Length: 210
Ligand code: URA
Image (cartoon, rainbow, N blue to C red; front, top):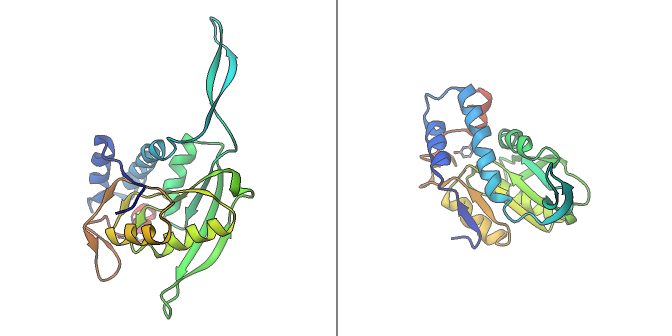
């Protein structure tokens, strides 16, 4: 399906995702669950962060303690729903650099158009994690990864909560070098581009806009 696809089937992730799918889950609870799941997914997607050691003194003796190496990673939120994942991951990785990519769909061409882009400098030396809860058609995800590559990023990963097979295939065709971490791959997209069974519009669910 995709050469670097990880579905995090951990019971805690799956339990929380089930609660999020329920249409009767409130906005406040949805947002809290998204924060929790984002941290569990971030744990998986950062597995290959480079490590070094740092000499420290414990209360008992000196030791070389494991320490993250290299430049701080960059998180890039695909607006607006990406912000729901961003908040939780930043709690876990508070020193990460943060970027934002805003895209809307041109109703004539149906292609994604940028309306806001602000990403950290020197992306080339960092692990870059693009976050968007829903990998649906894949159009905005592919456009966001295109843009990050144009900005110099070389080590990009994509983190989402739910993916449709169509979106995964689109990412595989456009960016087979970009690993994807998700909590589930659902059945299909409906005629409006919603993931089925899914959880509805992630932005509306987390911000209470509907
Ligand atoms: N975006 C959403 O928020 N939900 C979907 O099901 C698809 C795209």
